[in-house]
Length: 361
Image 1 (tube, rainbow, N blue to C red):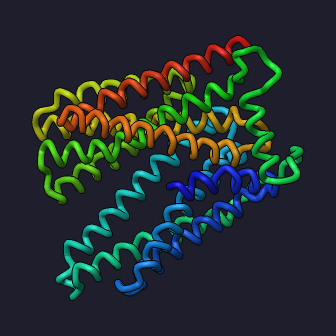
Image 2 (cartoon, rainbow, N blue to C red):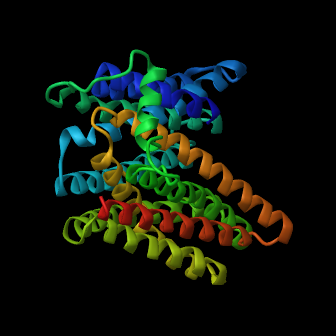
Image 3 (tube, rainbow, N blue to C red):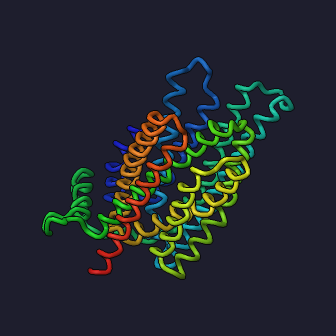
């Protein structure tokens, strides 16, 4: 995670300078898929190799996510951007669920294939790598149009500084944050909560309700499959009501999830809460990314999502730290959810500030 945070802004700025967003998607995806397949082939004694391939796969995934998001302004505009973003997230949830079913089915039926537990796990890594590789191939066939003619800095560092000046211009009053800057701050704050809440919900479910691994997989699959139509629904609402209203609907849902989680006392209630979470899980991510894509300074789309990636990891780290602190201080697994709710409301306030700033310009 640290390596990804250090690399992504500068690599994203370099991609913007070279206008190679599509090539960057393909390269990072191929590298990540190859790392997953290599992980399946390495001997158990190759500890350094195993660690290295995990790092390469994880960083490649982060880079592929950044560069894929940076393609959105090249592929769609206006309402079409909301539709494409939401359908993309929906397809991701569907594809992720199918890949998870294949991997867990192989592990569950390993005796039928004559595989050991280690061999089945290796097979699941291979499935992951091949799945990633196959569904990245169509990216090479899409026509993205002509390259941008936007002026760029002489180096990646200058390019990144040029982009940051657009977010925090130094020629304004004491409130020297642009509308796009407020939007960026709100997005990273909210997505930091989202990315922290998912694993923490799993931890709370395990420690509070003592779910077995198969039950946890079922819960994850339930969220995946419901998040698919949920993302499409939010994309449709975004096109009709506007992005900010759609985001407000999602944030209301997230606030309810974090608030109601405190009162969940049974497994059926946990599943009901998971359904509500799934309905707004993909929607908030797709609508916020669409906001950034259409508001990003021309020629700086990769840098936009690279900085977003770093900011999200930083706010996610802070949220995780505070979650753990609340848990440790109180001894109650659910106590950290209050911290996440406070950060979510703060991000919501930042988003409203960005909306007001846009209305006044």
